[in-house]
Image (cartoon, rainbow, N blue to C red; front, top):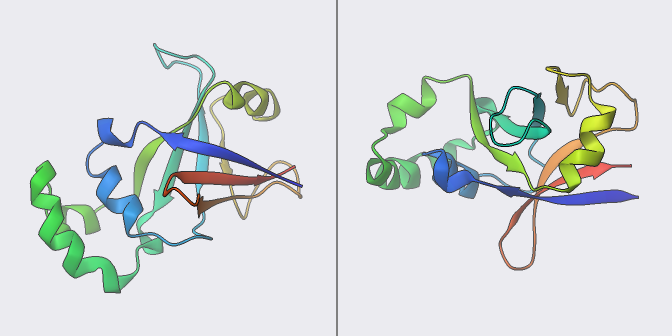
Length: 132
């Protein structure tokens, strides 16, 4: 069984909205609890390694990134990018399973069955898919 959780807040984190559109279903995500988050102490941040970015997406990103004050070179200079957050209230259930301040990676998780990867809803909403 899997849990699908919307990824939200990308428009607050340029160039996350442009970046995530370049990713395909199955892209590995890293989830990190943020107990010091002033808006939600049970927030779960969603990160993605830049190595997940397909090279074929570079020309489109080079054209759209200047709209949010970025260049392709700036983006490619990063190791990973903070995409946004798991939508509450689902993150509250997950937070209880996650060590405070620790990350949860799709390949290295605290529980062997846990996985996090990007999928797309039929309406185009990015979702984090987690195995229960």
